[in-house]
Every structure is written in structure tokens, then in C-alpha cells.
Length: 193
Image (tube, rainbow, N blue to C red):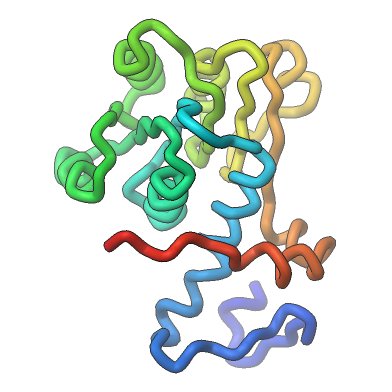
């Protein structure tokens, strides 16, 4: 893996100067977290009070997605496992939370929080049953943006489930569209924290 080497080559079109106020640790996460979230949200095309499910909302991409959802004024439902993660998310303004420990309970919790309605979109990073559960939680014309690597559905499986399902893999997305990434990939909201 190139990122674990002591030296690496990179496309010069994808290199930008690190802001002096940003640490190397912070800068190293911007591409993977905010870039993934921005690309995912752009593909989901959400605005207004649309209901969005963000799995693993207390993780790196999940926290960035939570911030982005607040910025877009989306109706956010986050999933997390441990009680302390729920507490952290509540302190950041995420009031509607479901468990990420069991897929079925997650969907039932989501439907309860949305008062019987369904989500307009989901940003999923969890595997196995959570992909099917997330698709079941979507309403008509709902969209599921998959950022996970394990258990990814084929186009045929997604079509059979009747869901608009797309896989976002930044490892292939960025090199194939470097211009988009530089122009749009870092257009992120200012942190509320």
C-alpha cells in the first residue's frame, strides 16, 4: 500500500499547500473524510428537510457527514453503537439516533423516528445486513450511497431491491476526476464546533 511507504508519488494536479494553521494530522484526514462526504452528498443531491441516514455517524466520515447535513439543513438520523458515541453525537446536535449494532433494530428505530416515513437517502459504510436494511429504510426514489468496501452489492442485486445504489470509492474517483476534486472536493462548510 503506497500510503504506508516512506516515500510516495502523487499526481501533481492533486497537491495543494497545507494551511499553516492546520496540523499534518488534520491535513491528512481532509482528503479522505471531507472529500468522501462532499462527493457522496453531491451524488445524493439532497437539500432542504430531506431525511438522511448516516451510518457510523461517530466515525471520521460520519462526523463530517453529520456536520455537512447540518449545513444543508437536512433531517439527519445517525447510527452508532456504543452509548458514549450516542452521547457525543447528541452533544454535536444530532438528536435522532439509532443503533448500529443490529440492522433490523436500526431500521425499526429509523422508521419510528421518522414517524412511519422513510428516508430519502442513506450514506452507508457498514456491511452485511446493513446494506439491505438501509435499502429497506428508503422511500420511493430513495438513494443509497455506499462508501464501504465489504459486501458491496452488484448492480443486479441493487436493481432487484429496487433501490438507486451507487458505490463511491475515492481511490478510483479522485484519479479519474482530478479536476473535479480540486475544484469541488474541498468546498466544505465551516465547522460549527
